[in-house]
Image (cartoon, rainbow, N blue to C red):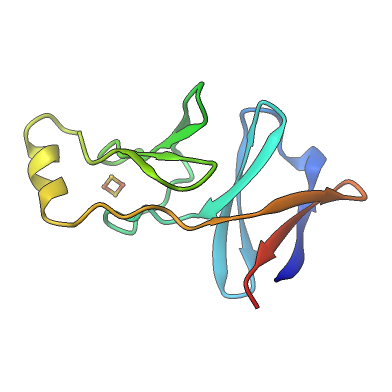
Length: 118
Ligand code: FES
């Protein structure tokens, strides 16, 4: 595992999000109640950005496009493609549910470090 320095932990207030480039990946960093999570930035449904996704109280991120919800801790799908009504669920059936890739994080000297596989 390679630990890569992303940004200062102060750069993301609680409830905030930031997309960072780490190597050839775009990673979404989320500060949920003071805990930092890192996931792939692209939704696993149609590869669209999660940057404007809402964070749920229980630690999920809601895709702004078709409202799939993913658990920030492990990337698991909590809900799949529910928006817009009727059409959303039809669109969801066109692609098998797929979790997000998540990455471990730690804070080191005030910076967010993200663990990427070697
Ligand atoms: S692109 Fe995210 S749910 Fe469709």
